[in-house]
Image 1: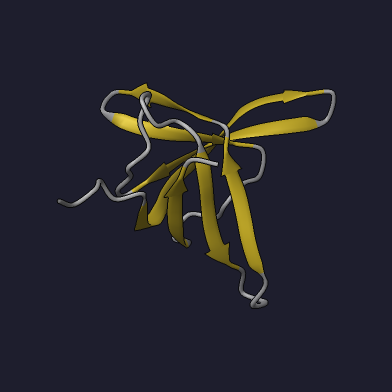
Image 2: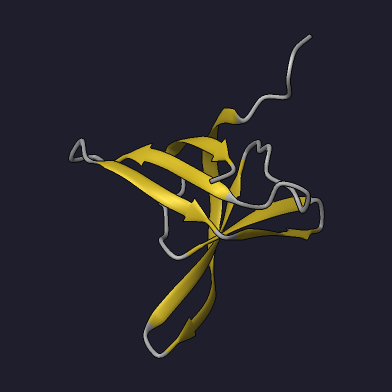
Length: 89
């Protein structure tokens, strides 16, 4: 018996500013593939910066719009960045 996957590899295909309140920004990040959904809306996107530093960007929720799942985060990722997505805490 196999369980559903909880991690995946993807590439950032778009990013947009969701809001900025008192200097705090929230971003929406679109990926070329995802396992996040309104049923499994939280987790983390992990990436490696050009400097070699590992980045962990918490996914706070998702917004589905026009067939695109936008991952809500408080940190931006650059378009073209490869990520590992992990569902859950």
